[in-house]
Length: 128
Image 1: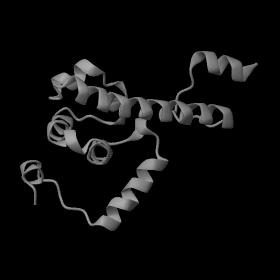
Image 2 (image 1 turned 30 degrees about the vertical axis):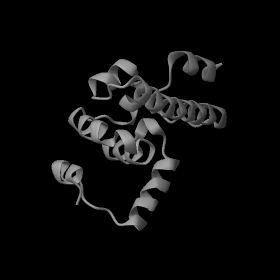
Image 3 (image 1 turned 90 degrees about the vertical axis):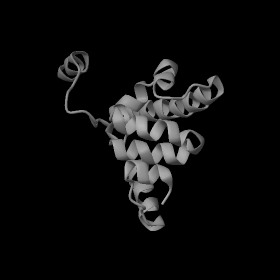
Image 4 (image 1 turned 180 degrees about the horizontal axis):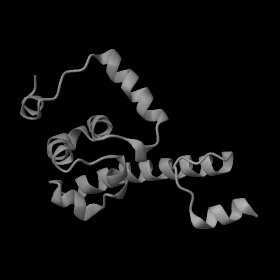
C-alpha cells in the first residue's frame, strides 16, 4: 500500500473492477460524476499531480460539477502551484468541458433532457 493510499485510506481495487469503473464513468456525463469518479479521473489523467489533488479533492468534495468549474486560481489553492502543472491540468479539464458540452448538445438534439428541469426559454419553445 502506498503512503498516499494509507493516508487517505484508499482501498486497492482489482484491475478488472478498475476497467469496469472506467467504462461506466466514460458513459456517464461528467456533471454526474461522484467524488470517487473524479478521484479515478485524477489517478488516470493527472498521475504526476495526484499527491496534491487527491487529498484536496476529498477534503473539498470535488464532484464532476465542481471539477468542470475549476480554474487556475482554484488549482493553486488546491495545492498545484506550478504554472506548467496548472496548464496541464487545465488542458485536461478543457477536454472534459468540451465532452460535457457535446453530450449536452446531443441530449438536446435527441430530445432527451439530461437534467430534470427545463429552462424557461426551452419550455416556451416546446409549447409552440
